[in-house]
Length: 150
Image 1 (cartoon, rainbow, N blue to C red):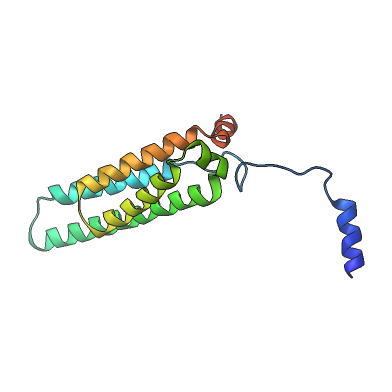
Image 2 (cartoon, rainbow, N blue to C red):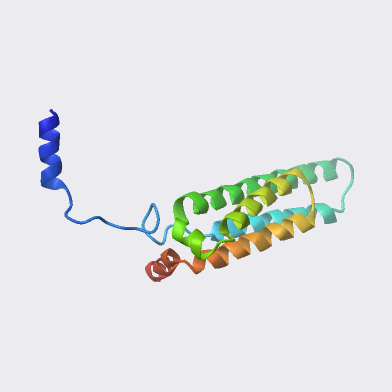
């Protein structure tokens, strides 16, 4: 059986290695969903702070807003993890030495946004995602993705 497998591998093995920037074809990854989730966290936090209701209406509305805020903070974190683990490559981290720290900080801000109702935290999360977005679009893989999307 091993001889057959070796023979098949020798016959069908490609002559050249393929190289790709990311795990999937370019044009799949994009930080836009992380940005939308972070913006939702910011908006929900602001609405919670500005909520003008009382009694059961306040409890109901604030409970729903907290649920949305936490859901989108988690979504943002997951989108950032995917970019970090599947899109960004060692050469991106070399070109942008701040990348690891920015993503680490952004995911910590997602957790902080879930834990509390702090507009400053929500704004810092938006700012961190914006910074990741800028780094993303400066990488070679994003340049290829932009061409594919057009």
